[in-house]
Image (tube, rainbow, N blue to C red; front, top):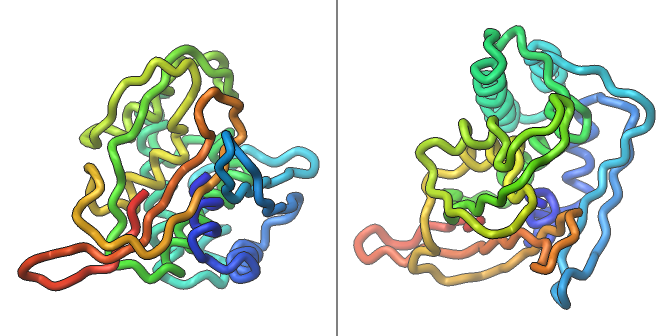
Length: 235
């Protein structure tokens, strides 16, 4: 959804796919399309994996990212996201971060999610990323570790210190990957600040719901009385 919203708000699709290609990872294809959700249109990014992908460790992902032709800034921020995930997974499962073998997060589609989102944010050339309080669903979700409560334990750990709120929706609204991207990239959390909105983008999700399955991003300039204006992205 983050990738879709960034494309919808103006990141060039060909450029972003080129950045993903720098990773040198094979066995997948990316499809970008416009979709409708409750009469609202957004951009959907579908990563299709061909065949089995290995369960990669943090060291494996570091070799992929740091050995790529991505910019140093995108490499550093991408690894900050993965390192944070490794710390959380290690804490939950009682092992050191270096011993963590990612399942969903180590798969090629999650690597594309993280690196593509970081690269997309860099392409927008914003001075700050501000994130709204994040909604939490409830119930259970099935993953590589079995059946887990919603929000997933990794999501809860990642969102410590960030504002969240409970909803009645029985579905996963924030994944560990999404949480890691936002807490690593956002400079602050809170309601929409006084700003002049210039662009709005919508990223489509895959989960069927009675609510629009969309992530909305605003691009604009903050209204600051003494410091002038600062360009910002609001997720």
